[in-house]
Picture 1 (cartoon, rainbow, N blue to C red):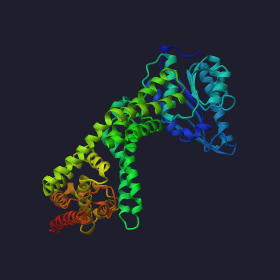
Picture 2 (spheres, rainbow, N blue to C red):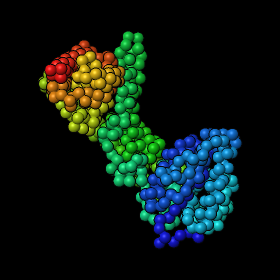
Picture 3 (spheres, rainbow, N blue to C red):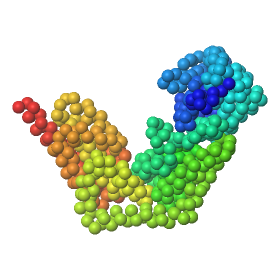
Picture 4 (cartoon, helix red, strand yellow):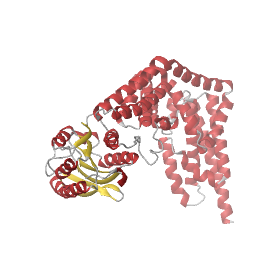
Length: 525
């Protein structure tokens, strides 16, 4: 018989397989699937007592006895693979675990089951029969297997198919049903990683910095198309650039909703729907629409499962309705405001540069290194760069970024390749310089040299200010996160951008080389 509430936390076992349809819905990633369930069990105060999960390398709909498979069981560190071989061999080993699970259910050591595309008539037959015998509640997914389990007398408290679900949302469904049956207080933990319990509310997962950083690849794709379209004979790519510009709000919305909801593909779909409806509000419209969709998705999933919606229906309702509602709010109410703010950012930066371009560029360049070291860059400057690019495809601050950070870092690292303070620093500098030049990022490569010598740090500030002044003076706009030879091709002033990049790099190189020479002479003396 099952334990009474006073006997301690409820204990459950996860049994089943990577399934047929499930295989393409997370069953092919058993580590994540089992970790998601364990996370939700922990949030409900339910103890994971055992695991018997057969993971095949192909869908069970097409698997044979010779298909490679792995048995996952519960180890001290958590669910882990413990046996490998053909499917028939692994099923035989799983059968031994099945017998032990049945005994644990009858003795009351295990209070319930989570059935994940289980095999009630075969590999999991003894455990399922024992659960039916002692009336231990079970939750699960897998239409055919759950129907068989119910026919055998299992007390199914939450069940659904797998279509349209994810490992995260299925886990919430499993644990919601068990927690409801046992009268346990349960708040779903959305997301992954060690901080998710503390950050259960979707509002706490709103991070402009995180959303913008996650969206960077789309902006870089747009910038690359712009650069390539400038090559003679490839101007037919200009419409592709325009299409990418129009699609950027959708990308931002999808990233925002996925991050805020913590629901993986469900949040991604909600964000895409919201982004399509929010696109006329620009980048900020997509951002707001995606955040709204993510928040609504999180709450809708919890609400639908609490009202006993099947997991498949809960996912469809959550993904579609959250995206629709969030997008409609922006489409009919907030788009004019977000569009005006985006235009205001662009106009404000342009006005600042026009007022005194030389001074504006120099000051912007000067503050770049303190901003990135102090953590301000990703919170303030990067969003400004992406908003500018979303408005016109290039950016004043993007050019400053490339000149004041990337090219200065390149100059510093190159100097330490040619004239290092010690031979051990040459390899470190060379790898950093290669990334600076080849990818237009990883300016942190200069940190060891900046922090080791105040003169190098002062030279970096001076070089960034000089390069920034040239950016402002020549009216150059471009972006970073591109190979160092690309930005001049997309800049509003190609020659001016190239000049600013060369001057910043050369100045940083010269100051660093002189500082290193002085250090080496002191060492010899």
